[in-house]
Length: 271
Ligand SMILES: NC(=O)c1ccc[n+]([C@@H]2O[C@H](COP(=O)([O-])OP(=O)(O)OC[C@H]3O[C@@H](n4cnc5c(N)ncnc54)[C@H](OP(=O)(O)O)[C@@H]3O)[C@@H](O)[C@H]2O)c1
Image (cartoon, rainbow, N blue to C red):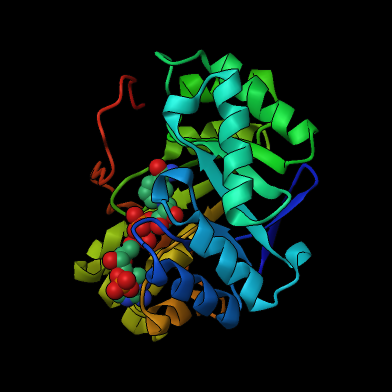
């Protein structure tokens, strides 16, 4: 597995997403992912599966030091007290004494200013309860404010061939930070795309694998696909033995059509 090194954290570039994996599906998915070689797991308080994710990690026998574990604070907990309480509750449910990355899940300026939220995340980091901190779904104006407050390492945003993230990626790159691509296979929609299918045929890969490869071939990008199928979990890891040409990379970038799949309509402006 390839890694990115940012500040003093080492992030496996491919992680396993767990949104919508509930109960035993979360347990089995994380067990399968760890068994197949994933060492980066993404969860959140909101997903309601931290107990199952924690149990799967414990039962897997994978050394805690080898694992990169992310969880997120829900936006209604964006105050200083809320961030601390949410982090402690997540650690308790996960059954670990620290996570590797703690994110604020969505902007929530009506709850607390970005500066208060990010400073509180940084206090949790200083207490050793997370190794790194970051934001999620932050457009560039809020991202720049977060960067001014504390040493965040990432912005986790929706990113796949049908949605460009040039602006967020530009700010992150300027500061040497990484972009975490969520919904990296457009929740399965990439399967229908003719260009991705054609490029995949050239390399003996599926449109899903081509999309993941396109993301991971960009500097400073990490991707966290989710699957409930062991075969798909394995296939999504099998993307390190191909190299897309510059022309193929550009053709895939050209598929962007502003298609945002996750947009709950909270009160802020996308770029
Ligand atoms: N920060 C945020 O606000 C936020 C928002 C959304 C997501 N996320 C994170 O990002 C993760 C991934 O995003 P996502 O869950 O929205 O969607 P995704 O990973 O883009 O797509 C998941 C879908 O693709 C299918 N799939 C996976 N691998 C496949 C394969 N090899 N072949 C065919 N189909 C495949 C899955 O079905 P099967 O189960 O049948 O394989 C599932 O329906 C989440 O789980 C979560 O951890 C974060």
